[in-house]
Amino acid sequence: MKTLFLFFYFLFSTTLCGLSTAQTSPVRINITTEHYHPFSFADRDGKITGATADKVHELFKRSRLAYQMNIMSWNRAFEMARKTPNTCVFSTAKTKEREPSFHWIGPIATGNWALFGSPDKLNKFKTLDDIKQSSIGTEEGQVVLSYLSAKGFKTVTSSESSTTFKNVAIGRIDFATASDTHGKKLIAENNLEGKVVWLFNYFHADYYLACHPKTQAEAIAKLNKKLREMKEDGSFKNIEAKY
Image 1 (cartoon, rainbow, N blue to C red):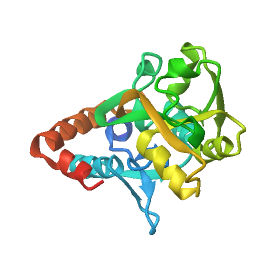
Image 2 (cartoon, rainbow, N blue to C red; image 1 turned 180 degrees about the vertical axis):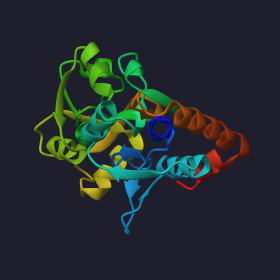
Image 3 (cartoon, one colour; image 1 turned 180 degrees about the horizontal axis):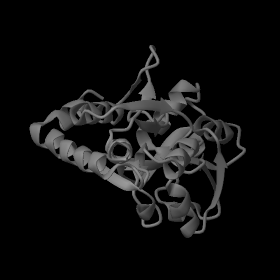
């Protein structure tokens, strides 16, 4: 009887230890991002690189955390991180509405949002107040949507930024908005020179790596610590200088 009791005690103890180990063992973190030059894009070999992507690669290398990084549309990338544990998304602007939905690591980059339009509009408009009755297009899920809507603008969304810029080129919408660097890259990539041009910058944002709130607290603390170290030792600025 005593032997049987010891057997069940050992089995129960082993099970508890197994559960404890499973609950605290490191997990593989899924990182999502978008094609957003020069912050994140796929090179000729399919590797995700860029001024922010390279920082995230280095950040996870220093933190010794297993991860995988995937590039997709912004709306899909953002929603995956918002809904799926152990998933993070970059480059994410922090807003009051978004802040409770994530753990935040950063800032990892900064950027300017700009307005783009047809060449005949160049030098005619300097601020958003000059175009109050106009339609502005951007990609689904972008942070500027709430900003523009609050100012009373009519916004038109598409699943890809390139579609928005093409719609400006054919006169379907009045303006497009994107980061200044990304918008200029889209114009070049889609052969829209002479059809769509940069007009002015109007919005500045700090960008973060935003992680689902159920991501391991230990991992979040480690990532923030290693980011501070990258900024202190100069590697953060060295990566930016490459782009």
